[in-house]
Length: 439
Image 1 (cartoon, rainbow, N blue to C red):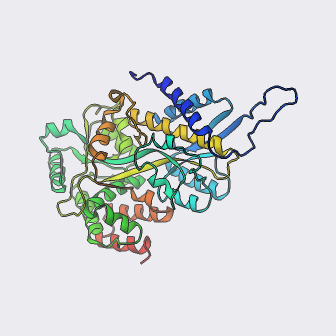
Image 2 (image 1 turned 30 degrees about the vertical axis):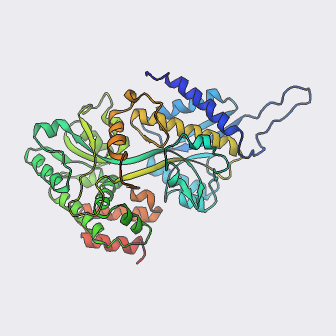
Image 3 (image 1 turned 120 degrees about the horizontal axis):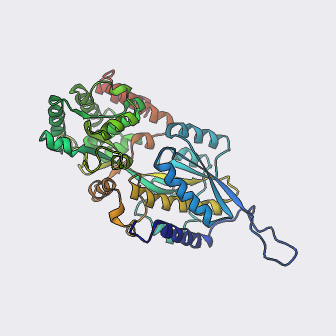
C-alpha cells in the first residue's frame, strides 16, 4: 500500500480519536481510578466492551478482526470483545437482547426504521454530547441523517449502500449488446442473451431481499424519491400507478426469462457465485458485492462494469436516483456502564471500517476519504462512488431498512409473490397499502 501504511494511519486515527473525544462526555464512574494509599499514581480499571456485529464471512470478518486487534493493542485498558452473527439471525438476536435489557455495549445496526424502535424504547445512547465538531468534520455531508431521530444523533455511520447494475462487459462485447440505459434496452438485452444461450440476469430470491432490491429500484425509477418516501411514510398510497407499474415490470422481466429457471429456489450466495464464474450477463445488487467480483479468485475480475439501473421511459423518477444511502452504523447501549469509552471505541470502529471497507470494496464510506490512496481502492467501489452516488439527485433506502420489522417482511414476501406470478401488480399495490399502511 502506497499510503503511509495502513498500520501507521490507523495508529494515528486511534490517537486522534482519543484526543478528540477525551474532553467530552460523561464518565460512568465505574471505570474511574481505584486509587492507592501509597502515593503512587492511581491505576485505571481495565474495561472490556462487548461488541456485536454481522461480519461473519470473509473478507469482512478478517478485516474487522484486524481493526479490533489494533484498537486492543493501542488501548490496553479498554478492550473490545467481538461476537459476529449472520445477517438475518442477527436481526432477531439484537432485537431479543435489547428487549431483554441484555444489549452489548456497542452494536452494529442498520439505520432508519431498523434502529428507530430501539431509540424510541430508550435503549440507545444519544451521542450529541459526546461527538465533537472535529469528529463530525471528518464525515461526509449527511452522514448522520439516517441515524438522527427527533433531532438527536443515536449512532455513528460508517458505510452507505448503493444499488448498482453489474454488467459483464466480456459477454456484452461478445454478443454486441448495448449496455442498457432504458428499460426497453434492458428488455432487448434480455432477449439477445436468451437467444444466444446466456442467462441474462441472476438474483437469489430464496433469500427474499435480493429480489426486493430490484423491485425497490424499479419503483424509484417509476415514482421518484419523494413519492417513494411519501408512500413509505403513509402519506401516499402503494396503489399509485408508479408502484403497480414497477411490479408489472418485474413480471415483464420474469416472463421474458430474464432470470432463467429456478430463480425462486436460488440463494444470493449461489447467484453471486454463478455470476462470478462469468456465466451471467447482469446482476443488480448492493455495492458490497464488488469485493467478490474483484477478488483474485473471481473469473470476472476486471471484466465487470458498475452502472446505474436503466431509466423508465414512462416513469417520474430522476435517472440518477439510487437505492441506498447511509445504512451501517455503530450504536452504543444506553445501559452500558462505560459510556465514554464505548463512544470512543464505536467512533474508532466506524472510521476504521469506513476506510478499510472502501479500500476493499465492502463498503462505501460515510467518512471523508481524500487521504486514501485512490489507486488502492476497489475499482468497482470507486465506479459506484464516482458514477452512481456523486451527482445523484437523491436516494431512498431499500424498503426493508426503512420499514419496521413486520412491515419489512411483508414487503419482501409480496415482492416474492410478484416474482412467482402469484399476484397481479394491482394486487401487490393493494396488499402493500392494506398491510403496511393499514388502509
